[in-house]
Structure formats: structure tokens, C-alpha cells
Length: 132
Ligand code: ZN
Image (cartoon, rainbow, N blue to C red):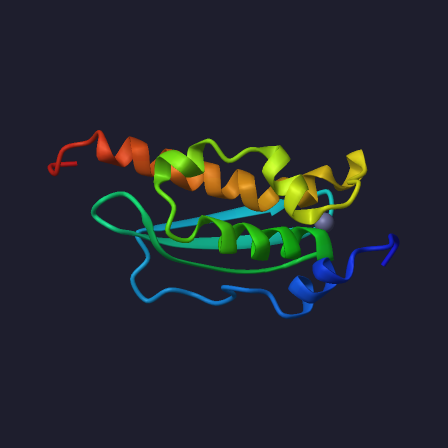
């Protein structure tokens, strides 16, 4: 541990919220940050009305990457995909509540980037017909 992290970050890191897998995920997306070795797999179950019914993730990596995934998954439960699309980097930084150095930025943003990419897959999927 090379930084002073807030207790809340360490708490999320040690006991991540929504850690695990879903039985019937609508969306599954993997993300990794090769610079640090962080990995996460994000699973989302989406209701017919486009809101997040449930979310889970598994992963390993540094405290920042795992804590931000834990906090982000808490935050998006019940939200619509449209709301998720407007979630930005600043929201993630606000969750973490500490200064993130440029070297750690990819760790902090891994879960958000994975989420955004899962949601854009979903949007693409909705535009397709059943034959595909
Ligand atoms: Zn990291």
C-alpha cells in the first residue's frame, strides 16, 4: 500500500459490495488495466424497462480499482441505462473522495469504463433484430 487511503476505501476493498456473480445476467463485461494488473468482470441484470435490477462483479487488483467497482455497483442499482450513460469520471472520483494520481487514474476508472462499454453493447444489441 503506497498511499494513505480513506478507511471507506479499505473497507470496500476488504469487503466489496455486490461481489460475486449473477445467475442470469443480461450483460457481462470484462475489463482490465494492464498497467497495474487490475481485472474486473461486471455482470448486470436489466429489467424490461431498462433499469438495473441487479449487479455483481468479481475481480482482483489494487484497492483503488476494487473499491471503486464496489462503490460504483452500489450506485447504479435501480438506475436506468440512460442515467448510467451520464455517470462520469467525476462521480467515481467523488465516491473515492481522495486525490487520485495520474498513475492511479486507470485503476479508479476501470469499473466505470467496463460499465460504459457494457451499456454501449446493450444499446447496440437493442438496435438489432431477432434474426441476428
Ligand atoms: Zn490498480
